[in-house]
Structures are given as structure tokens and as C-alpha cells.
Length: 591
Ligand code: 3HC
Image (tube, rainbow, N blue to C red; front, top):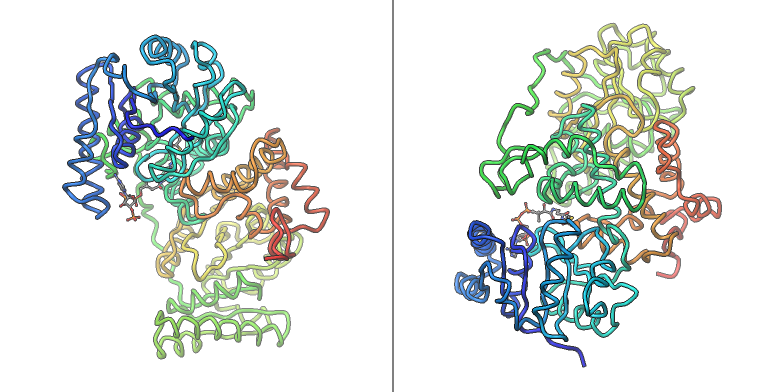
């Protein structure tokens, strides 16, 4: 028989503890929340009130339900108030000595059959369990911030946990409307083990001034559909917690990628802990407020004036090229695209017509706009027809020799003052620039697929690109309703450099038999709100493409942790390339 908990204690009522208490109380449980001082209790009540009134404002709770919910949570500073709890969840700072001491006190206080749970993200649950007189009744119960919103709770069992306790706790997780993923006791469990390498990588990117915090975050939101960018997420998690989690992960993995970025330590030492203190990597309107306000690090717009652009040339006939043609023409530019044969010219025209027909059916464009857009597009097989373009965007195959030859030819043909852009996602833009006599006019413009839908464009100036060239490309992005981000000319730019090592880590986790494909995908979608889990995403992107990008990143940065996972290599060799071949990590042939 599964045990039904009715009274649960929560020790540590910070952002996580208060969130956990809210979730439990929302499902009718009686909750006792303990903080170490009155100020902590005050903060917790304030947090609970703000969070529940947000839920009321969003129609998730009625005012009466919110009041009843708050009435179910008793708060105080005395641990003795937990004496008759059947389950106590600790959510105090991520320090082993603090947690061990608390567990020793709770062990002495609580009935022998009470369950002790830790919300630790990375510390050893086994060590905590074996320090008590009831190791079989100790579990990890790892929640995600904000606890009232995120759907996942990782239930961590150690080698000594009683399976029936895991079942009881799983039943509780289900009862409070969350889904539990059971995991073994390893630093970071499933989600954090994958998330924190990525977050730390983003921090290092910011620390090295490779891109602004706003651009790093926008790149990941618009490029991958994540609900938050990594730096904003670090602020939400709390920079102190993030530091401790990375530190513990590094201690266990000795993987340099987990060594906390020095910048993180500086913020923590300065007491700038993120959203909860009103200042972290960003500055907020007030402690606990989600509203970001400008500060000294807010980027200042460049004063360079853009060059006029009316006519845009696009080279290529692939998905990317035809998407760019459509987007630019829709935004009022005259577009001439160059294909290698008349059949390809016709194919691109047909594709764009089809896409506009769909948009028309969905009411996204009017009949007149459709006709006007098509009227602005000309196809050609001759590069010479691009001579009077103000901006030429190439989207041909990712082969450096081919791109260099093309840039050299364009340099001869296209009028002086015109900008030459490459959509490369993995080759150095500077190589294309050096193939011309006008390196100051060459820039990277990395669009995302499908260009008609994805809002992001990574704009990549090289060391030689002129400021007004950057200003012009930013202006074109604005006019085409894209969100441009600026980054340096190195492998992976922002999105691929952050995304693919994370995907590769997921393969390594699978290879290590720590979790299944479904568990990992589930953890990342429910725990972090990602639109797709890593395996679903790799199957869409293509395992061959994933492997090629990961290899490029490894060759550029020589980071040992970024060596492509052998399993990825094997699947590609076997021809399991993802959805396009009917089989990748998952088998689609029988669905
Ligand atoms: N109770 C119930 N529902 C609530 C609520 C509450 N107290 N407060 C907000 N909501 C609901 C809202 O109604 C809304 O629902 P809807 O989409 O159906 O309208 C939803 O939650 C989103 O809330 P908001 O509108 O207030 O806020 P945003 O849309 O700006 O989303 C966010 C904010 C949920 C934080 C989102 O940006 C997100 O999912 N970010 C990713 C967070 C993440 O990755 N968390 C995991 C971090 S790792 C971790 O925590 C582990 C630890 O060990 C470090």
C-alpha cells in the first residue's frame, strides 16, 4: 500500500523551499515551513504571497483558493514544529556540512518511519542518508525553479533507499501534479548534469566579452525556443546555488567544463546573487522581480549610419536560400537570386509560391501582399545579374573552397560599397573576407532554418568588418522582423557553440546508462521548459549534422569534454541519421 503523506515539513524557505511549500499546499497538504530567522520567515511569506497572487492574476487560482493555500502553510523558526511531520524536505543552501547537521537534528526529532528528503541538486544523497540512523528512508527530491510552474521532480534513490519509500514519494509527486523521474545518485542527476555545463559555457562566453548577455540570451531563446536564455536562467536559479552546484559537479567529474567561471565567484562574493537579491548578471526592478532594468552593462547602440539597401542578392537554391529570398521580398526588398540552372530557378519560385499560398490560407498575408512579394523576386543563372545589389547573401554548400571562389567572383562583379554576407554556420567568415579586395564589406549573417519562421540571425563581424556594414545588416534584420545578435567570428557562434556540447553530453549520459532517452528528453522538457528534449532535437537536426558541428567545435576549442560521443559516431556510421532516414536515436519507421 502506498503511503499517503498529509503533513510535510519544508526546511529552508528560500525561492525553492517556498515554491515547494506552495505546490504541496495547493494540493491540500498541511505544510510546516521552517527558516533560520524571522527575516527569513518574512521573506518566505512575501515570496508566497507574490507567487500566489501571480497565479491568481493568471487565472490559475481563485483568490479564495490562494487564501486557503496560504492558510495551510505554517511558518516559523523552530525545528521542533516538524516533530509530527511524515516527510521533511530540506531546501537549505547547497553545503554538505549544513545539510548533514540538519539531517542529524531531524533524525533525532522525527518518528522512525518519517521520510527525509533533500532538494540538493548535486550533493551526494548517499552521504546524507548514511549519516542518519534511517538511510533507507532518505531520498533526493529535486525540484525545478519556479517549483509551482515546472512539471518535473527528480526522485533520487541511493543504493540503500527502500524501494517502497521511492514509491511513496513518487505517489506524492504525482498527487501534487508533477511527474517524477527516478534517477541514481550522481552529481547533477539528469537535468542539472546537462544544464550546468551549458550554463557555465554561456557564462564563459559572456565573461570573455564574446557577446553581450542580452545577445547570448536572445540567441538561445530565438534560436532554440528555450523559455529563457542561460544568463537570465542563472539569475533565476541563484548565482550562489549555481556556484555550489558547479563546484560539486566539478569535484565529482573533474571536467574542466564544470569548473565555475571565475565571474560567477565574483558575483557571489559581491552578494549579487541573481533575481532574489535584485541584482545578478542583470539588474531587476526589485528583489524577486522578473522585470529587468538597464544598468552599466546594457549595450549601447552603435552610432554608425547604415548604408542604403534596396536590392538584395541571394546565392543558392536550398531551403535556407529560398527562405531568405522570401523573407527579404516580403519585407519590401527587391530580391534577385542566383541558381545554377533554369530548373532550379523554377523550383525556388514554385517553393516560394507554395509557401506564400500557405500563408495566404492562414490569413498571414493578403492577396495583394502575395502578388507584390512575388513581383519583387527575380531568378537568374548569372552572377552578373547581382552587380547592382546593395547586399549579397550567399547560402551555398558549407565548403570553404567553394565559398572563397564565390566571394572572389562576387568581388569582381558586385558594385563597390555593396556588402557581401555569408550564411555559413561553421566556416570562418574571415576566410571569405580575405578572398575579396574589400574585407571591410564582408560579414557573417547566420540565419536559422526555416528562415521564414525563426526570428534569430547571428550577425558576425570579422576583425576587418566596417562598423557601418554591421549597422546595415542590423537594419536589414530589423526590417525583416528578425532579432539580430552580434557575436565574434569563431566556430559555432553563439547558438551552436552552446547547444551542441549539451546535446553531445546527453549522448554521453545515455552511453553511460545513467538514464534512458525518454527520461532525458522528459527531464529537459518538463524540468527546464525546453520545447524538445536533446534526443528528439538531434533526430530532427540530423545525427550527421550534429556530429559534424560537434567535430568542428572540438577542432576549434580542443576542449577534451567536447570530443564527439562514440555512440553518435557509431549511429552515423550505421546510417541512423534521424527522422530523415526513419531512424536515429528513436525508430520512426514503425510509428
Ligand atoms: N502557480 C501556478 N502557476 C503559475 C504560478 C503559480 N504560482 N506562477 C506562474 N504560473 C504560470 C502562469 O500562469 C503561466 O502559465 P500559462 O503559460 O499557462 O499562462 C506560467 O506559469 C508561466 O508564468 P509567467 O507568465 O509568470 O512567466 P513567464 O511566461 O515569463 O515564464 C518561466 C517564466 C516559467 C520561469 C519560464 O521562463 C521558464 O520556464 N523558464 C525556464 C526555467 C527553468 O529552466 N527552470 C529550471 C532551472 S534548473 C533548476 O531549477 C534546478 C536547480 O537545481 C537549480
